[in-house]
Image (cartoon, rainbow, N blue to C red; front, side, top):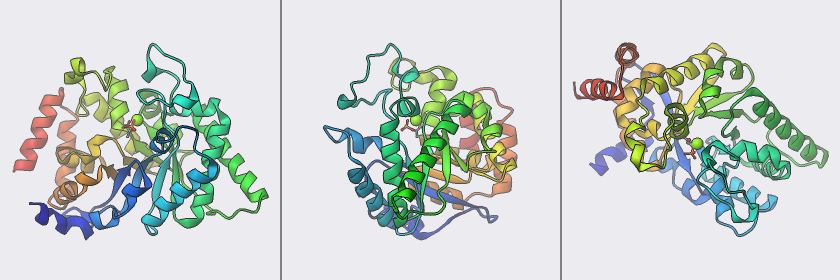
Length: 323
Ligand code: PEP
Ligand code: MG
């Protein structure tokens, strides 16, 4: 089975009727990018930079960050890498930041909220990414965006970092795509407005599910309610992809739904452009996509949008894949 799947490593993910999607990998360290192209990853769709911060006893310097981002870009030899700015808080702690104890950490001081408050931290990270952009096509993505002001402030910080480096005579890529994660329902509902301003979206289903159905993603007691096949989650995903299409932008997905072969017919039917997943999921998902007919997936998706429960949706997808 493993050898059979390896065949898909250097093939594109194209449906039987010729629709191609981009298959990317989620990584947490530059080392994980090494050898990724040989495993079938056409890009890095999510580099979770918090692991760089969590692996140190103090804040990583601009130079340390630059080296990590550059190493990742070089390992991907010309393929795109989406670097997510620091997503700390929630379940992830950083001792040296001295974060306050919170009643509801997942609803609190986390990710972009923290970064817009501690501007030096974000500015340093953006400078490091911009410097590394001279070594490969990097893109930047901001996590946990809930409204337009946050995105505009983050973009303003990016422009400030760029201006500083220009004044210092540092070389960087001329154009860097800037995107946001869609992982809070308010952002999904406003996708049409965001799509006018951002270059891309990446849907984080891990958090989007948690915030849509009000189920803590770490709580086993209520995990039976946590399901990316919930009709409300699917509605939000559809809304986001449709909004990006209307504005000539693209949508990726880096939550674990993208790595689930059962979701493939639905995500193809919805028109998802880029799929980012754990490297170990790539070959199976690629194989599944190459067996599917996109027009049949579109028809199936139309039916799925009428279904009422996650169980019915899972069943419809399983039946379709078994046909
Ligand atoms: C997500 O929320 O789906 C996601 C990809 O980000 P993380 O799992 O790092 O919160
Ligand atoms: Mg998330």
